[in-house]
Length: 366
Image 1 (cartoon, one colour):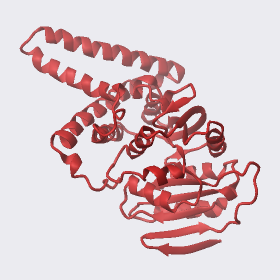
Image 2 (cartoon, helix red, strand yellow; image 1 turned 180 degrees about the vertical axis):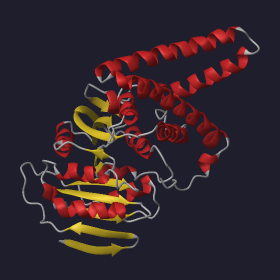
Image 3 (cartoon, one colour; image 1 turned 90 degrees about the vertical axis):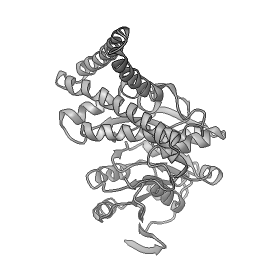
Image 4 (tube, one colour; image 1 turned 30 degrees about the vertical axis):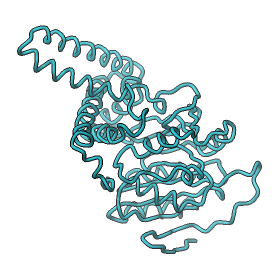
């Protein structure tokens, strides 16, 4: 069933399949590129969801680009390929980081459409077919849909984190998380891209440890590419399961966001500035309140407004889910916002004021 080959640092493991036969409307070949590193906890569910796609399987290939330091993830990919007869290749990523993993996948993909997916996410059975349908219907260069955070663990904190991330207050109204109307956007999640975009505008910036897809999307839309969003395309993303890992995720996301300041006019928006500006205002108010009494009232006002909004969203989410999640949801909001705020401020100093941005050559392994 398997054919093994090797090319440079990339080893291919693929399931033999017959060339695509004629399909109604001449459907395009689709390559799902999944960069992974130590994803053995999640990858099986991800591959099961791809195996259940209603899109013709002879036009669908999966590229698992493995940056792990062990072979457990690759073994899981092999097992699910055997079980589901998937057209799957495993590619090695010696760098261990996401942007290099994506580029290895894209440069070895045989499809006409590339879908960027991740190992800790799952897609409904119509995910691929809907992407192709909207690409054709809207004559778009890329499309993206709604991503819902979910927990693989049936515990209060992981589930509460997911509820908070899906709310307007959690991430500031990111279209891919809370959008309800179809429209053109500049940053899809798990986007489906026409192959020629990479040939025309280049591949993923391999310096970016985080936000590499955001930078690529900004680059292509700034050059005129059209990306269409529809909430009819849906997928689930398994979020972090602890406050510590959640804080680290948004700290690093904000830190690397600053790497793009000055490169793209739209790279930093009001929702990105809100957490760091709020955090700075609180810190300054604390310091100045010792010397100028009115700043005590400013500090209390800032904390009061934030607390009221956080309480309101936490209560609303708890009523819709279960009241037992209320304390965990309430804690989740400041973890996200403080992590993002501190990361953004540190990124400004690190990448811009201290000039580290000019010295970054390759993304960190992650």
